[in-house]
Amino acid sequence: MTRRILPIASRRDTTRLAWALLRQRRGPLITSAAAFALAGALGLVAPWVLGDLVDVISDGDGDRTTVLRGAAVIAAAGLGAGLSAGVAIAALGHAVIPALARLREEVVARALDLEPDRLEEAGRGDVLARVGDDVRTVSTSLDEGVPMTIDALVAIGFTAVGLSALDWRLGLAGLCAIPVYALGLRWYLPHSGPRYRAERVAEGERAEALLTGLQSASTLRALRYEDAWRGQIETRSWQAATVAIDVFHLLTRFFARSNRAELIGLLMVLGTGFFLVRGDLATVGAATTAALFFHRLFNPIGGLLATFDQVQAAGASLARLAGLALLPASAAASPPVTATRPALDLAAIHHQYGEGDEILHDVSLHVAPGEKVALVGATGAGKSTLALIAAGHLVPSRGSRTLDGTSYDDMGAQDVRARVALVTQQVHVFAGTVRDNLTLAAPEATADAVQDVLERTRANGWVAALPDGLDTVVGAHGHALTPAQAQQIALARVLLADRPVVVLDEATAEAGSSGARQLDDAAAEVLRGRTSLVVAHRLSQAVTADRIVVLDHGKVAEEGTHQELLAFGGQYATLWSSWSRA
Image (cartoon, rainbow, N blue to C red; front, side, top):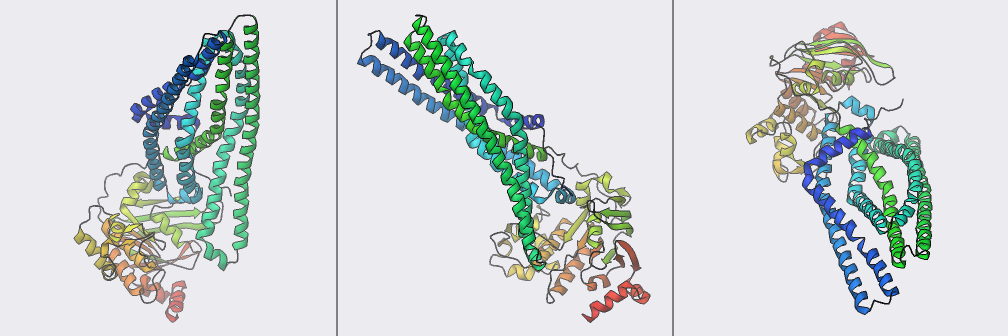
């Protein structure tokens, strides 16, 4: 099945978003435009002075002082143009870099706001490629391509005006190159845009394959599937390379068309100048200035074409960033639920991933206020899927979910998450101190509150033993926490967040035999007094539940207390017997 990647904005929406971000910095933009214009005007000085010198020397009126004076004027104009260009680029940086930073913040905010199932459907590689490769492409373009493009456009504009002011016939001759340039652009633009977008998508597919391979390396080796997956990585890498090569071939063909336009334009200017001088309609100096003017266009046009590849790539990346940034933000939280411990109801839940087999079949579950319900069953029974649906992190294919009679759809994702906490087997330790990892859930939490949740989750002992206690840096490049310690931090966060409903999806599965009791006690502390649904990795967790629901092949097979299910002698009794012997 083809993955449904995240949206890509249209050119109009991308332009509208870029302008909305840039217009907040109008002062630097105006300064940049004025400085670029001054640099372009000063660039005309050298050809004009050289043309005058040719006429003066041809007439025999010039001397050494005339030449030195002209050289001084050219040098001063060159220095002024350089300084103006520097000011223009600096001012442009002050305008666009904050705009890019704001865009990056919007993209990350919308990515964090996405529903987990939508994120999984798109693939993590798509998101990482946008916040990584696409941001880098746009940044590089802003640092190099955009200033060069603006400088080239200004130089072309002023040179065209200067050429026409020199002699309208010479200006008309230079204009003969425009149709040839236009034909080249008319051919290039429709072909290049889709290819650059395809290149960005192919890079996202490659990132997805690499990321999945790295994260699942141990599983792939255990299944002896590493060679097959390496083949997938090679296939997607070559697909990305093929698109990039295609883009390069397209660009070289565009350069050939541009060189043809330069040749035609220069021949027309030189030929027109020759006939004008021969007919005493223009001076040799004017013809020289015209040739220098047109020759001066080679570098700006060449630079413009050289950066066109970069600008096109940046445009494709910006459209991908805008597609994510323009996604609607989650609605603000609705009024709080009146019940401190709301009832959770799942009615006629069906679910399937993509076009695969249905995982859950008509499952209905009622969790009373303050009740603890344990889900048990064999691997693949649908326990984790049901837990994710209950937590609001997965939208079922069919069925309804309510808290105290209010539909999840009516509350919205943000409001559901404000009421329901989810802890899974895979928890993330954020780069920062232990205190930072805890107070993410409650930034206003006091030191006493932090210490209290550590004690209640049995984590105070090992946290106190860390080199800097609560201020020890953990996560990436910091002190490494064991899987059980990371789970205790996650459970402590739930206590600080104080959600009325808690869903634990094998949240204590990472504990070894020595730490199982501590982690079970921490989980019991988190669940006390809350409406809770627990996917039980160890059946010792199910024993303490108010009610146990046994899932089998996506359906509710049994339901009751521990003693009731043992007396019934069904699947749960068999599972308990096997687990007890183990």
